[in-house]
Length: 289
Image (tube, rainbow, N blue to C red; front, side, top):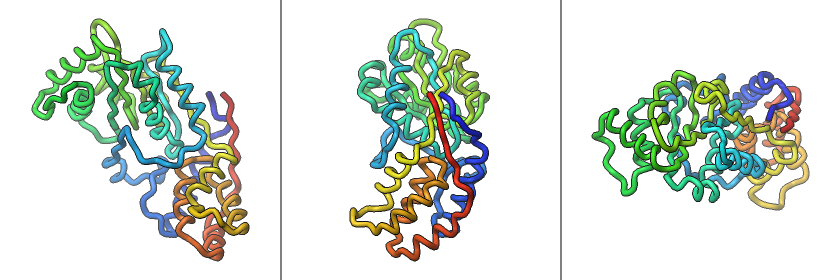
């Protein structure tokens, strides 16, 4: 799957949109390489469960990824790649919690967020803690013991490990030893990354999945769910909303941030003021499988 446009203009466009939003009072935003704060990168953690209520345009992508992971003779590594704000973690989370995945990988599932700053021992501890039943105390285990126990699980059981937000090929090299058992089953790995080379570095046969940006209709659906908590909304507000979401480039995170900001503004003049602060050419996206 490829995106039918250059991502760089959208990246710059969203950086400006988010900056405008921050200037208008939205302080905690995570979008792309240029707009992420270093401190947020270092502290970022993700989890396999979430209370996300606003999921739009994911169904087909989820089914395709589940298919890649459960089909016979499939690649051991599947990678979800794309710019920040595209919804990679959300998509991985839906796959991880899919009933087909749970019934297929009887050896267990594990989720670990690597991000930019991590320790190999902590990553291995997180994986082992989720795979061993009943749970054991991994806090005092040394790296060689963790390695031995994880490999033992992988050699005898079919497991899926999600590695969320891994940035560099060298990061994979630091943690890969547990994914290379000498016999039996090899674990399946689902990666999310902004760098598609990470997956190919882990496995030259890696399936690289690039989510598409939302269509205008999907963007509007998502925006309405967040920005219009009540059904009776002024027509003028809807028209302004439709105009503004065109500047989000189909990125779910940008749409959610904009919707959350406008959902707290109840006066038409406030919506008009925000619209005037988001001034740029419209970005149109088109993708194909």
